[in-house]
Amino acid sequence: MARRILTGYRPTGKLHLGHLHGNLKQMIVLQEEAECYFFIADWHALTTDYQDPSHMREYTEDMVLDWLAAGIDPDKAAVYRQSDLPEVAEFQLYLSMITPLGWLERVPSFKEQLEQLKGKDISTHGFLGYPVLQAADILVVRADGVPVGEDQLPHLELTREITRRFNFLYGETFKEPQSLLSRSPRIPGTDGRKMSKSYGNYISLTDPPDEIRKKVLSMITDPARRTRMDPGDPEKCSAFQLHKVQTADRLEEIAERCRSAGWGCVECKGILADRVVEALLPFQERRGELESRPGYVWEVMESGLARVKPLARSVLDEVRKRMGID
Ligand code: TRP
Image (tube, rainbow, N blue to C red; front, side):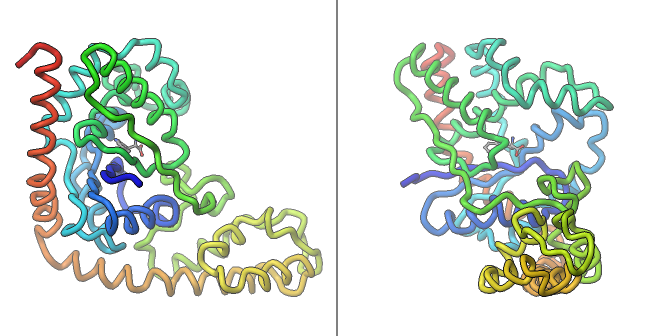
């Protein structure tokens, strides 16, 4: 069992159902059984958004509010902001000395993002070093488990490679961290692709009920069900994938009514929308309460920082010693 857990989110604004069912639920469980470090990766956000950092503060607050409202307990997990921990930046510098260029150029997300984020000039030193910064995040607390989505696995693999290289060069110092994939199915967005902020296909945890209903009704279903009388294949329906996590108790019945054309998609989605609205109600109430406490998120991050700081300091002391900089 992993004893020390770390994970970070880039501040991209309000969280959506994909975050909740993918990663966040797992974090909420883990905080009960392990020492947890959850941080806002604002330096990572800068690697792609350095040209317009105007939302950084707002997005950081939104994300922490969403974490807390969803059930992250700041008395159990240390919640902090990456940029408040300069040990991470110093550590990245040391790790960058030992990380071969070829390893970084080979990371799949590096090439993909250069292609996809055409509007942004990210052929920068900072963006190439993204995974080195991530390795510093992880090793600075000596995390042994890192809850992440599938897209992050290559970054975790690189962290392990950097760890082995460090240990090889300077003597056994770090254990190799393991990635912890959540077991829940991939949450599709309204268009059937993975739910993601950048695709604009997401349902936010903070969306009001009518907005949620509208979005659920627009979800892509099995294209074979052109009319009410055509039977469908639930596995080809994005609404059904969401039913799997929101309506697990009625899943058989829902699948059957789809296969037999026993009901229409509008009816099926109506039930789903009700479930999502109902499930988010306590979250939204709690978030409203937290929003009315000015400065609260910053107090949370201050106390989280106080907990991670001594650990990071002691790791850096050892790293410096190993690398001849003490
Ligand atoms: N790269 C991660 C993402 O985009 C965010 C992140 C930064 C992270 N540092 C991390 C995740 C360390 C896990 C551990 O989602």
